[in-house]
Amino acid sequence: MRLKIVQVGEPVLRTPAKPLTPEEVTSDDIKRLINDMRETMYDAPGVGLAAPQVGLPLQLAVIEDREDLLNPIPPADLEEKERTPVPFHVIINPKIELLGIENVQFFEGCLSLSGFSALVPRSRQVRVTYLNEHAEEKSILATGWYARILQHEIDHLHGTLYIDKMHPRSFSSFENLNRYWKAKPISEVVDDLKL
Image (cartoon, rainbow, N blue to C red; front, side):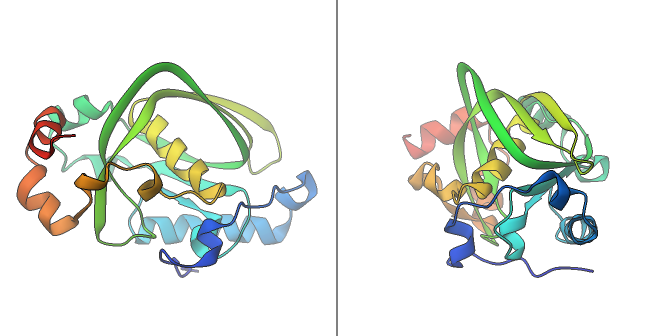
């Protein structure tokens, strides 16, 4: 079932989400929620969806960066962003550790801020420990775009949106992003916007 994605201004997007117990994680209700969130993310389309985005203050997110989403992107852009396909997975009660001091910035959007994007600095590499949908503890070491997706989705679980971390001067509609910035390297965008 496709779920409604709530938009910025809904209080649930600014509320820290509640952790799930192992019993809750393996319940039929959470299994159904995961399936519905996956379908909703595909339909949007998006690469991640957190439970608060569908109105539920739970520490749960689904992630997948599908190959079909990457196919239309020029190889140079994929290389600059360190973006490769990421298989579907669920993160529950995640804990994140930012690794190293290197931050990278790219335009980022959000299904809960439909139609807009901005440059957001993020850690290039992260380690995340979490429970999967079977309540098993797992760990991920992620770099590049995958690290960005994880940071974005985990932020949602703490009531944080990318607009809290963006360069305000870069905030743009998708239409203007495509018109003015999409074809330029990030370093040139940064210079043009005097960031």
